[in-house]
Length: 241
Image: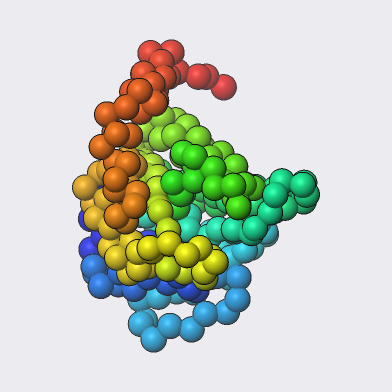
């Protein structure tokens, strides 16, 4: 899957990694970039089509689908990260609404277009999906759930020719991680690595130095082997409606 001459949709495209993904897609020659944001967006490049898209709003999602003529790559980048201590159920529900159900809802809505193009789904996850970050546990829980969603979609959609990629990021220099006093990768370098991973067909993309230190262990580990083993069960006995 190359980016040149493809149609790409990025949610959460107004800042941080999302904004960098829009610019990187343009740099790589995308023919159309749909930029999904909750607030109106203006872009100087005529190839960019802004979409009003709150991923928790089913009506906005459907309206966005109706404006997209064709789609090759969907990047579920929109996310929420709030500090909490799991004492408030509402905080957990907020994270799940955006990071899990938002990703699920947008994916399902655009799946017919992606099936038609035999395209790719890219879900922005986090190394917190592997091990929770105690200062943002609700975020960590939602990303772990979104990682499982990503793995499930990968197995279920393989027969339709749709590839599914999970991006396991470490700390990135964005507003979301402003409170973390640790080394951070730039959004631009992460965006480049994400598209490199998609073009190389990597199921899990580790786009920064911190996450890259885990890549070899993950790809050769028992959990990844079990994922493949379980996916083979689906191929042997497909689920019927």
